[in-house]
Image 1: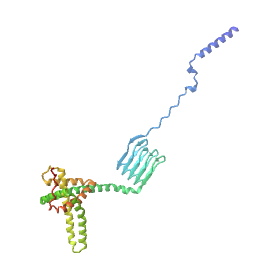
Image 2: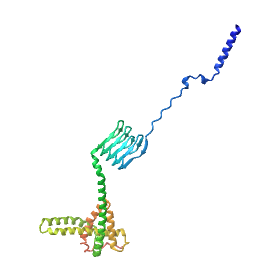
Image 3: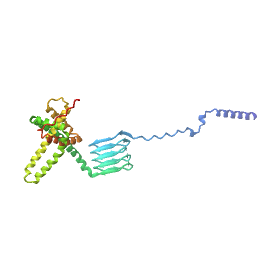
Image 4: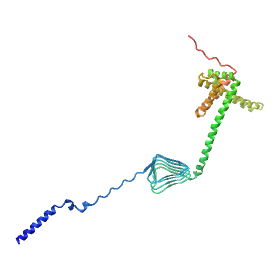
Amino acid sequence: MKRLCTALLLALALGARAEDKKPAAAKASPAATRKAPAAKAAPEEPKRVADGVFKFGKDISLGTGQSVDGPVVAFGGSVAVDGRINGPVVALGGSAQLGPHTVVSGPVVSLGGSATLQDGARVEGPVIELPHARSLARLAAPLFTAAAALAALAVVGKLVAGVGWLLLAVVLWALFPAALRNTRDTLERETAACFAWGVVCWPALAAAAVAFLVSLVGIPLVPLVAFLAAAVYVWGMLAIAFWLGDRLGAGRWESGLVSVLVGVVALKVLAFVPLVRWAIWAATTIFGAGAAFASRFGTRAAAPAPTAEVK
């Protein structure tokens, strides 16, 4: 009996030692073997399309996840957006439709249509819609075409006028070369007198025209005053062109006609510049007309040029 108890105790001891030798992984709790939950994916950033979208006569469509860093403008079309716009949204001649994922950091303008915002759309600026402007938008193209045609006609008119001035310069130079030289010399040497004559002559011509109109006897003389005013302007214009051509030529041209023609071309080219155009007109109406009167249309020679004294 004693031997039997000893054998049982020995068997229990051996079993306990074998249990201690099992790997620690086998004793791990079920909670330790569970898989960790997967991390949530970060929200996808909007895909940048461009710095700005402009279309003429076409619609603009930007879907979900698209962004524009600038204005979105459709000329003669509609705009449909469902992304982020860092700028204004403008539809000229169409409608503006904003989806639920739209974020606009600027105004939304629809001229000639409607501005529709679905639930969830956010606009950080005013929403302006003028549905009755469609008729004006339809007129924009023909008005633009008419304006371009008028501008082209104006350019053609200036070119034709320039050719007319060149022909007039040739004719007057052929008839009165010495008179034009005298007028140019008067303009150059007696500038102050030309200015004074230019300031006085135009009010005097206007007063004479009014006086002739008031008196019945003087009415037939009104066309004569108008002709005199036109002659003064033309003669003064050619005198200034002659003077300018001499300055541009700097003595390179022997013929005075070349100086006159070069001066006319230079004045007509400068006349395309708005501010310079008015300066040319002022110089012609004051200094040029004054030179015509001061030189009596070139029949009076200018004062001799001052000479340097020799010490």
